[in-house]
Image (cartoon, rainbow, N blue to C red; front, top):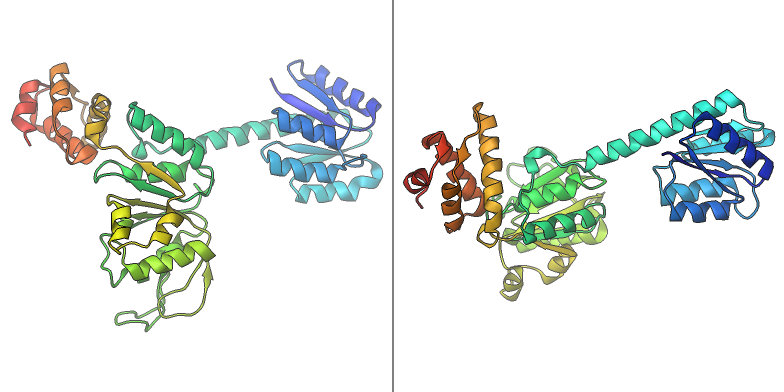
Length: 387
């Protein structure tokens, strides 16, 4: 049921507007506020699908209400109500984010069309917001164990913020999936997520990779080149295996986090960047700090939010769901029908020591699907999944 709020200091106009809107559609729930302050109070306490707001009012005028609502609940469409002398102001409110304006006295057809269009717009905004929050199937995080449920709840709280996140856990546990969830459920999802595997880049090239370089800054630098931080501007940079980053590169990352600016290798020119940093490591960074291999100040900058991804051996109850997910995924990749696993086969797989975590489990499932029978049996597991 659409909920509409009319903010208008003249009681007669409020009654007319409410009567017209209510008679048009009995499902509309219409509430009234006699001034801007009351309207803001009601909006902060309740969810409205549309606000009609007068421009000239005591205590708080319509422009102030518009600005306040846009900061509180930007998804609510606001239609301004303007007297003859307020027309220029009404037009200006469109630049401030108003959906539309109607003149006094209100034209019946214009009013109803505006209300319908505004409510349709609100519905689309909500639908788009929900779609944005749905994470790509590729990055599904499968499991219902306590550890995975805790991580999912953490992501729901943390993703909409710009807080930096440090993801820890053994290799193969799915730290990159957590990073993708954080990005795709954030307000930065339309901007790029740039991934950097710090362990895969030679230490002498990591600074150039992250921050770019200018022509002639080192042997082989034949032209200016932007780095990953610039590529991720407006979005997210995922620094995987950050524990393998050189100390000199760590110092530059620290500066980027402190000042929101970087400089290319060989240049003194600062470049402003707006990047959310998510980092991951399989190392004990506290131990690395004690041994002088990782900067403590950088650790505290990165670890605003800590998320630890448990080893598969600590979430064995998720293995049946993971097997089913991988079986369907692999069948789709191979263009075949997904194979089933017998209860005894699944039970045996749950008892294995998964030192390679989820990555190892997926490889074993793929091997069993290729080599096993139509229904993968306990015998197939003993024959083909030996470690």
